Image 1 (cartoon, rainbow, N blue to C red):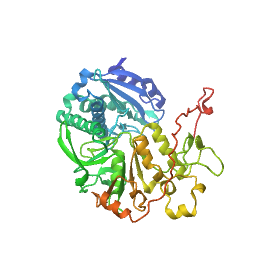
Image 2: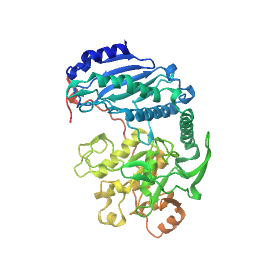
Image 3: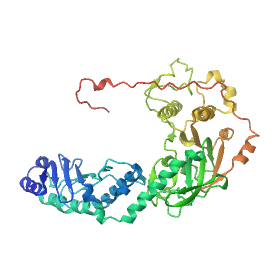
Length: 469
């Protein structure tokens, strides 16, 4: 390993040379508080920036072990450190001048979700921190500007590390609050199955987002309030008792007028498989972490998948037990998505009729009379939804705004009224009695065949490098 002084000497030597000379600085360098690793050097100031890492020894970092002694606490701390390093990097980015991406300092941009990212990792054994980021090495045209590079390596990066990756400069109370929130979120996930729930939405949550392209909470957004019939309370390790809507396992139907919050609630449940940062409004919206959002994907590829639970007796005689296509229709793609999710071990489907294939979801009574069952190869989802729960233990949450077919099969029915949920199960069931239930299939589906063995593409034979589109 080289010293920081050797790096400075190298920069002086390559100053004003052609840009490829920057490759001479690849390697690891010891600084007082950390080790800098220059992993990849860009070939041009206008190319993708160079890849760098810093390694902070656990003793130098000084973060208390209690902040990362469990997996979920460690992920929360890594996320917080990435955000802090990103703020510091943004403050000094492009202060070193030059052409193209010269002076760029950036790390993975974090959203509202708390995720395990490769940008930052903490060794649970010794507390060593690794931060991976990008730097645009400075140049004038395609000539190295080593003086500006020195500013990055000896002024800006040390400041970023000092402020973001050393506990002595951190807000200890804030980091403890991050760990406490991680504990509370993990606790809710743990007790959901014990309570017979597939999801929980806390009272006071803010589900509406700022805009369609922003994941930040809407200012002045309506706060969530659970219907009394569905209200549950959970005792959290740090926050104490919290109340909210417990979504029971089974079949849940979400209905309501347009723009009243149906899809907003479903989107919150969809993202509830992830923890969220404090202040997001969805910190305590927790969903079964095996949940899968199912939708139609016209044109997707399907490889040897057993979709016979939903599609059989094709006119061309094509096998649906091991079905393959490069251009699936909406209904076929949605059937494959369901089967693949079952294969992956899901316990909860999330479905919005807006993004579903209608002929996969329902067949109304008139259509059944005109087009007889023996002429229709598709068994709609409504005919399998009860079997999926009773036989496989897979719950379903469906958003519907146009068809009332699912009123007959739903266990729980929620109406969204100006972003406030109401339990209308009893009322909806009584109203549904005046309408005949859509006749379904009588025979149960066979057990899906999950014995596929994917094979390597022939394109990879021979060991040579190839390009795929």
